[in-house]
Image (cartoon, rainbow, N blue to C red; front, side, top):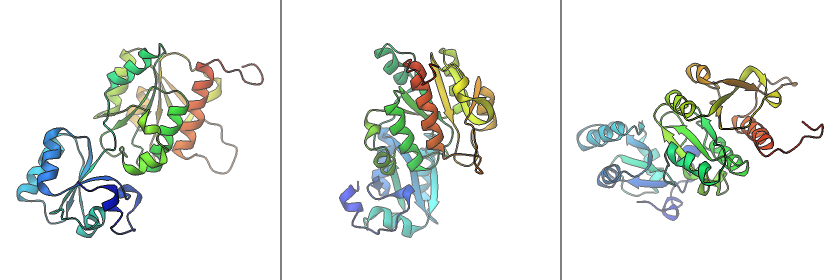
Length: 270
């Protein structure tokens, strides 16, 4: 396993997705053992041209567990590993274990509060995810749900951006967001989606058991996810730009939920 210190000895040109300090597992046997042990792994990276033999077996094991497998340039793997021998295979492990949806409900129950859950539909930018985790913790959310595929995971970059909030905010990773929304509904949650052409967020009743769905940076919430929402919340736009950064929009909405849930009165007494 490559430590943060070892990684920092490598190239300084890594992009945000593979930022220095990620918990990196390098080599065929270490990666295979990490998969066998059930370790939380965000993705497995394989050097182009190496998808055969034991590497092909590793890729199959990862895919069976729902872990994304990506082919990448060998030089990128060299950078990620800081010069350590990787044999064409690298796993990026989460900085913290993921929880279950049940665990999130248990947190709310332990506080004797109605569940307040943030659901992220394919947020891919690590800095957005980190910022949302930080705001969610400050706003009193009980947990965050993210998809296993096409989304940022609990990487070092996410942890850094969250300013340590990831230590206190439970994050569950699920296979299917629409199915999970159905589960939340069955457990008494009202589902609110953030998207255009909805109701003005400040005019809605946002108390009780609820989940707030935030869509991806470019596409917003998916069609099927939107159909699962009970209410679509929108932020009024008065400028020339018609959308906000995902983490900014999430922050505004989370604090409105917090204001209503804790009966914090607005200036006009609303």
